[in-house]
Image (cartoon, rainbow, N blue to C red; front, side, top):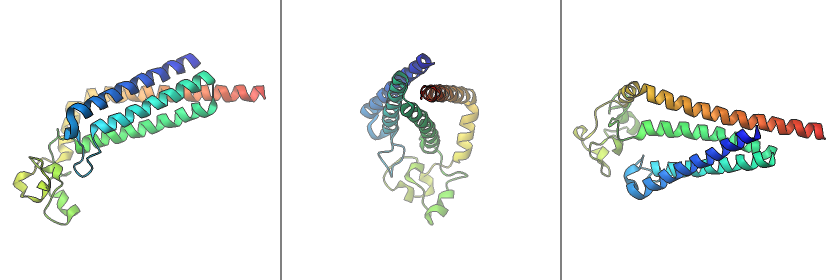
Length: 196
């Protein structure tokens, strides 16, 4: 069991290195282009990948040391951090679908959804056909008209198989990691109980 868990942790570290590398590449080549929100420029795809990659590398390292030393605290920390990664992934997926430029949409039903939010005839700058500072204050002729709900729904239907396979693979790997961590943790606790 320790060898399987150690291999899993090493692959986690390598995966983290890959994600970190893609994040750095995006930051260097794309600059601000990959910014997900104009009101919060640090929220970019590159920065999210860099932070996630670094976090996954740290988790993999904690898992490796926990497996080698058979340390309960490190194994439990690995388990908890893997759960946190799952929540981060969920957040990234949501941000991707909300902020991506590819969908070119505005509002859930249509662009007028934003009028109630701002209490005026305006939309976020991300709704503009051509992005510029405060472009959401201009006339409706300069905004995307397509509703985001329908746009995302159509995209998901067109890519359902790929999204499903990716989601299942990710879930299986995470469940496998959680299972390895908890099994090894229980074995160490059991060994400590018998030795005491």
